[in-house]
Amino acid sequence: MVSTFFFVGFAVLASLFISCLSLSENVTFLVVGDWGGVETSPYSTFAERQMASSMGKTAKAISSSFQISLGDNFYHRGVKNVDDPRFQQTFENVFKAPSLQSPWLVLLGNHDHYGNASAQIAYSKVSDRWHLPDFYYTKIYPIDDLGHTLQLVFIDAIILAGKTHPKVRSFPPSGPKSKSWAEEEWAWIEKTLAESTATWLVVAGHYPVLSAGLHGPTQLLVRRLKPLLEKYNASAYFSGHEHCLQHIHVPQTRTHYYGIGTGSYVQRCTKHYHTLPAHSIRYVCDKGNCRGSYASVSVTAKLMKIVIYSFSQQILYENIHANPRN
Image (tube, rainbow, N blue to C red; front, side, top):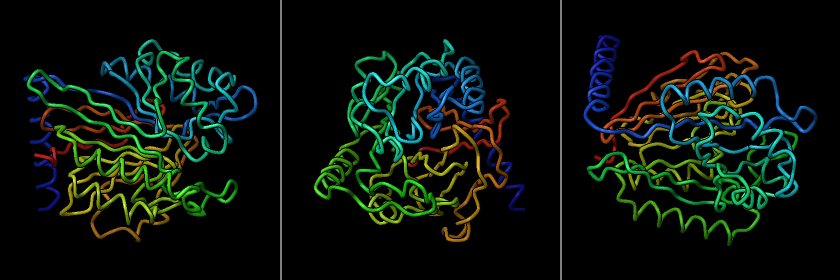
């Protein structure tokens, strides 16, 4: 009975989504995290290059307007300066498809903060497609001619929660290096969310809030960010860090949590499965492999569609949900 209701409901949503696409415009983009290559020649991995090729095909097929990078852009210790050859070796020369020359909206991960994080901000003035104007920022895109908009809020989770141990990946973040800097960002986040009048409000950060993977929930973000996302009806939160694929939605709440930190490889995503709220896990990847993965997102005034792809463009998971801000 439940499964029948689920599939009927999904079919109705899918039909409504297609109808919306035919009646109004939409915003489409790709999301990928943790793709940052390696520190030795050729400075990119086979999996990253395969995934970049797949992303190029998908971006062309959906007419992607931009790409979102969820951090850990350069393994393992970020970049040294704005002239660091890693920008070319790991990014420009890898994501080279014509369809991927549209803007890349970038945020920083813990591995980026091990290096010169400010250099990645400065690179925005060098590259036409690398967009990282500050450690945290927001962008608003029109969806149609009727005034519907998508607001993207990019946070720096490392300023908020601190770095992780450089060798023991399972250790939680150490706590903010500068409490005053963290509090400034917290104030900016709440002000930005509170003032948003966007049709869709999507937040992106490197560390997950909720996670079934190796790291599990980021407790500081559970305590401080999750209540803000729910208070201001954030539609979704995208994160990397966990090298696994997941979709978490706590019943009776509005925000959907998507983990897509799989630009280099995919891991099993089950270590903290049973620590999450009951009935909140909509999808986790329970089989690891050495290949990359990414997602596409399409947003109309009423619906959001998420499609997760493998390195070979195989669809691994799809979800359509209504706008929680309505």
